[in-house]
Length: 275
Image (cartoon, rainbow, N blue to C red; front, side, top):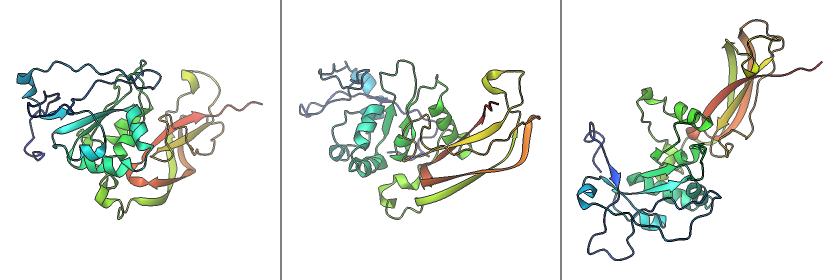
């Protein structure tokens, strides 16, 4: 592949290419998503699209159907795969696929995308795909949910230019000597909070009793994108009459397994005290 410097100011197009004449019948192009809303795959044969050779010559990357990573790692670096979120979940259930996928991503591109059954345009947890080294993790940007918050936090790195370097843990040669591995105790202290809103958008009412929930999303603890794993929270500040907290000596402690693929998210809440 060309170097990033050679690609400055250029647009790379991914598409499908017709099979060469000398290719045998086992060569197939990438098929459309055959996933049904209930999560099952459609067993019917995919309909191959009609490909215009003149337009195909403009493409840099060729979409090829995934069969296995042993075969994929032998393909040209311009051949790439697209995986639905259900395919990502299925492949990662076998631990043997993880190093093979990371090896594939060393000199190939992987794209992941939401399942076709998400008719409400909801999103999946992008951290699993990021931790595998997938370069393009597509989300439904029209939906402002937890996955989009994680995506926004991830790409605020590197000056917000739109690109971030992959963590060292996503490279197979660093798996045994990666300094990011090992359990780490993360302690977060809440120093201040200002302009805290009342619950449910209320303008008037009783004084609030706020606390902060910290959700740490990683490969182990954040299986679901809604942060349904363990979420430590601070102590409740009772009867907060003003609009801000300063010097609140509240802290939370979280045990994480791989700090290279962790995103922290803080959410303020209030507790209802019934007398």
